[in-house]
Image (cartoon, rainbow, N blue to C red; front, side, top):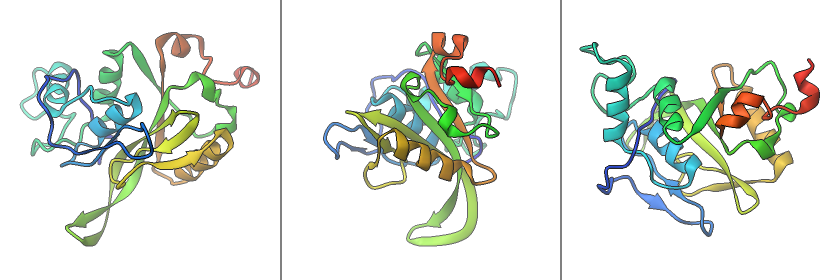
Length: 204
């Protein structure tokens, strides 16, 4: 999906996207339509907070005068952009920090990061047929009970990544793709004081 997908507060209606609670208490919302940004947000927060309807409301607030909204798919199937994700996180008193890929992931202070939202290339499928096309896709990574999990909504269930060292390896591999990008989900005060970065790296 494009630097894609998100939404705001739940309306109380039960969405049709499926929820997996495998791997113990790990919340995992699965892919529906082009709603990967919504799924990534909910998965990184570990609860169903955002819906398509509230994401569309954010889009309208971001571009109230536009007939064709630039922050979502023209077809109305989702494909929300990074601005929607950032606005959604702000509504939860959180911030999205864009990761400069010129840094190594070892310079992250992972204890200050609530979760990660990555935008990566993803194969397009038509039913069981995989097409020779690549689109942009949002996915979440989050620590639950001391272990980090890949909470990609396209997965059948969460995949345990491991501890800090395995997380750094996973993130490095994802970011090695030319078009991959990463957002750090942090508390606002962490964004403001820059403590998501190891103190030694502030000096560089």
